Image 1 (spheres, chains in turn cyan, blue):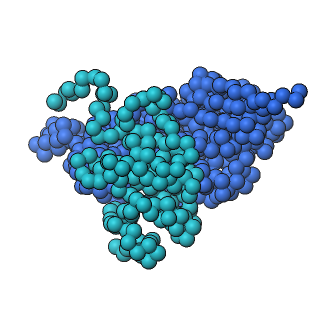
Image 2: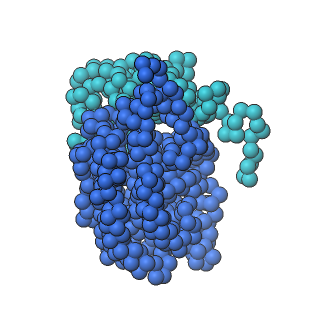
Image 3: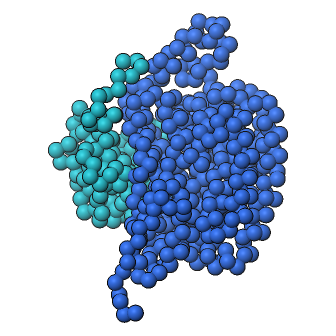
Length: 160
Length: 392
């Protein structure tokens, strides 16, 4: 399968921003440097027409370095094309610049990502917890957060 | 009356017009909304976290409980995502695909009926509510005959369906889909020309195409702002490309337009259901993937391979290769997306759900600020939100 058109254009525009390109089941995932995410997002939206941010979320690869990935699922309404952008985020500096200035959609998903995964979004207009109560401690979707909550015996399960 | 102070009013989380446990903090200047702040999360059950501790098959019932008004659509989005992850999308038998499309459209009717019922009730038209629930009851009866459950159907499986259709159900569905367009006309007769309905909906909750795309609106709400985008046509799945239907696009951008569009969508859904019934041919309902799909019962009791496969799938599940996929479908309320990451284990490493209502609700402040308090009710209704999928 040929390389996705956006990959070449991204490499052309930003010389060293693309870290990795993966093709899987016909979908393209481009990993880019965290520092450049706003510039890359603006380029993808303004120049390549990825005007719709479907979804944004964090993934916790506990035990690997960098520990987190922030994933942006983009859509081009004119070309009906999907593209996925990822940025690696280190645990000790778990912060990414917000893209809510590029796509307003990002506002709530970024809040959710901070709430559940503990990744801060710099310059976000309103970074508060969204799904968990305001006084909650911890970030439940992290892999080291127990399923049953922090203060309970883990469920042993039928198969354990 | 020179007082320029605003008043803060709390609406919800228990309010009949918020369609669930949604809390709105409204800052009012007289009757005009200055600022609206939604608070969500009262129904958070941690579905994404739970799924990381269950096998792919065990996660299907969790998806029923997201948008509980459209359970089959949630199931469909999820199983399609898993099938894509496994790379078995092409192996789904034609009969299974046809039944999936038919039931997904029936689900759209069911969801739109509840939307119309509650939306009209909020604005003060009670008769429509009773009519819609009468029809919805028939769909629920069909659901019950097919899946055994009235709401949480859990009927689709990775690779196909859990069981074939029961005898005689196709006649029920055909009868229902044939009479439904006439019933939609009845609802329209009660509302469309009604002066009160028009005054409450025309020009209310306006949002332009640029703003709608920017904030991420999808589904009928986006198409009413003049954006011609429907995933069933543009990124077809389950064989939607073989059906003849119209994508309803309007450019009035307001509550009345969204009302008209959803009613037209219901008529289109009936057409798709009838086409699916005509296409329906006997055949297998599960893909030929013995390591993924449960074998038929006669194989389990008669063959050693069947018994082994059944045992392995139930106790261990299946292991997709390492990778990640995103699958979006056109659910009744907009784009429902599942982003799945596999690390090669039998559990999803990460499942992120993109619920249409979550993103659509985000547009609410923008749509109501500057309008009257009463219009907030109409706008919540027109966005067609379900808190079950917003809070997950």
